[in-house]
Amino acid sequence: MTSSISSLLVDPVSGLSGDMWLGALIDLGVPWESFMEAITGLGLTGYQLESHAVSLRGLHATKVTVTLHDDPQPHRHLQDVLAIIDGSSLPCPVKEQASHIFQRLAEAEAHVHGCSVDHVHFHEVGAVDAIIDIVGTCWCLHYLGVKTIYLLPLPLGSGTVRCAHGLMPVPAPATAELVRDFPVIFGHGDGELVTPTGAAIATTLGTPLPSSLPIRPLRIGYGAGSRDGGDRPNVLRLIQFHHSEKKSPPNGQKVLVDHPGQQQQQHRHGHGHEVNHHHRHHSHASDNHDQGHELESGADGELPWETVDVITTSLDDINPQWLPPLMEHLLQAGALDVQCQPSVTKKGRPSFVLTLVSLPRDRNQLLKCLFAESTTFGIRCRSEQRTYLLRDWVDVTTDYGTVRIKRGWLGKQLLQAQPEFEDVLQRAQQHQLPLSTIYQAAKYAFDQAFCLRESSH
Ligand SMILES: O=C([S-])c1cc(C(=O)S)c[n+]([C@@H]2O[C@H](COP(=O)(O)O)[C@@H](O)[C@H]2O)c1
Ligand code: NI
Image (cartoon, rainbow, N blue to C red; front, side, top):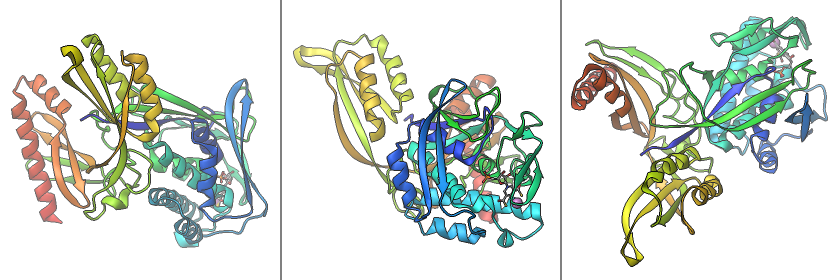
């Protein structure tokens, strides 16, 4: 089965801030009413939330503004913010991601100011608008079903910025701390282009875009910032794209949908076999944003469930050469799976039954695509429940090179471990060996490494 993963490319044209994240996500198609309703679930008061279409240097963008009734805000500690998030009615993966972002903000602040995380006084970054920016961003990502986020280099700006601490160098110290180990551009552009909130979201949830990863853009959103960007529009551009799951994530990528609550670990083992564990550290919904199939549903052996559409049509007059591109097109348009079975229809005509599995939110797009790209005059659609294993990838090193292993988990139980076929094929072709040789070597390397790790813990 091949399914589609939704990814996001962060293109910080003129920088990155919390409100730019929100604007770009709303611009990408998150319904404003649903967003407002979700934010109400935070239980905060004393603010007004607005979204406006704006034109910046002729570029259409969305500007989200949070206006506070009570200024200045109380100086909150990390625990205060975490309690607000925890006490909200937001989905668990959203709470977990947002808390993780605030935790990293607190760690950056603690480092910069030389105090413990518990003693950090959030000034601006703990205000209601920052909470809405961060929680709202996590909710929008959850809504869109985004699983992986890639970052282009972050232009940090130059000069100084005035904040609650007084005059600070750009990047602000907390930002400088948060972007450690990420590609950034210093001294380019005037003023503070990346704020601590913008940086915390990006660096907690995203990884740098691997240079070898081609992307197929689907939707593009522009989020407006508050500053005047000079001769370039002050926008954040977010590009949503799909890539096929069979091309599993490059090594080290953060997977927002994955096996619960474990940090990425690396273990080296004997026999020359190495395993990199790419566990997710933020839970997120599986293939859609419906409630009830998030992380906790699979946490302790409980089966995760979700509602999917099963869309079928019979094609008795299609040129068979059209079928492979049609199936690929449907996958790109969001189908989780596409199957084609030979059949015989009325008047003894040889035909094909095309069946797709997809998420309800992609229904209209897929139906339109099917009408446009096939010869059908009618399509059936039914709702079904599906359950699935949560998955992640580990690398094993064999005598023939590295092979990725896709693992399937039911809670903490490992139920599947399959060498990635594309890797097996590549190694087999490279060494001119049978597929089974590589497959067995990968299985053996995995068993050795995995069993050793389990018994050494
Ligand atoms: O709120 C705090 S503690 C704070 C710390 C720092 C440090 O770098 S330390 C910087 N700032 C500045 O506040 C504004 C708002 O930041 P947002 O991320 O909430 O947009 C910004 O200019 C920061 O540099 C605040
Ligand atoms: Ni500070």
